[in-house]
Picture 1: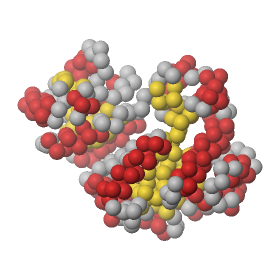
Picture 2 (picture 1 turned 90 degrees about the horizontal axis):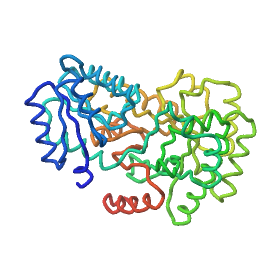
Picture 3 (picture 1 turned 45 degrees about the vertical axis):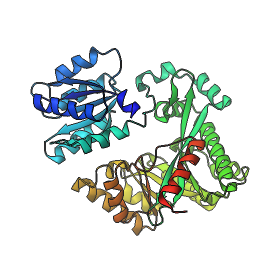
Picture 4 (picture 1 turned 180 degrees about the horizontal axis):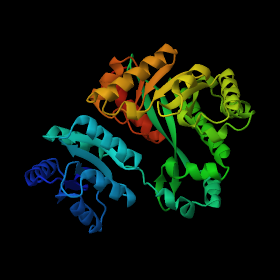
Length: 403
């Protein structure tokens, strides 16, 4: 609970009783620094007056003067990087639309709270704060912070580390595979998320070098795990910028074979929203990648330009349903309908269906009931370094008695 006590929370609500009530519940749950504001303008003033960062905003949508949506727009423009919970008694569809709008503006929405708020719902939110967010770099400053030479040196020096997030089989409860996620171990900024440096790498023509680096490290780690008797597969994200050379299947095949890992243990994830480039070349490369034995996943399914056509023509083996169609699905009929449709579509095409972004038990149970094959998300575990993953897996086995 120490991490909760160190958290600074700002609550925005025009109802004075609600402010006092939520503040009291937060303190009961161990938060010792709670700030309050009665509307958006007051909230902006409180934020601007702080020397230390505010870690969590609990923001009402309906407020006089500057409402919650206007407040969120303002803090997005100011590059607020803390976590946010939307808090309101408005229609659930309106609350969901506000959540999507805030996410589109780059804000870190970790949940919603319906009124009247309960101590249990607040506790669930605070539990997420025990997994600190990666440092986020303002995208407008990327070019100034990360120059090409610095990135090259990071690659040469081996400062790109891999974290692993497990995927659990719905039918068995086993951890069947992990997705590896690149993190830059930066001397000044700590671990930097890929969203903050991958675009720069793509623009600088270094993406092929990075992907080979990540693929090799992932295969080496998988080799270690297989020798330890762990029955796992590993997924590696591949940028569309990689799919510019017809010899790519051979390059990837060699990288994996050099690590003595069966190729069918490796899955390459391609983001759907970027599949609309040179269709013939993309189809050629992806088909030959499949011929080599790699699994091939369509990532962030449902967010791209032509989902049905993509599944019809591309040789995918796995469909990953994007978190926007899973987060809060148990409580939101529209989100549930999209989740159910995506899972059914994947099964019709005979694909392994993975639902990602699952953060609460209710969404986990719903995704399982709707027939997906695997589930990934913070409800199961956060991305972890290899050693931490092994410790987590050992505890998971003991608790679940699945192995």
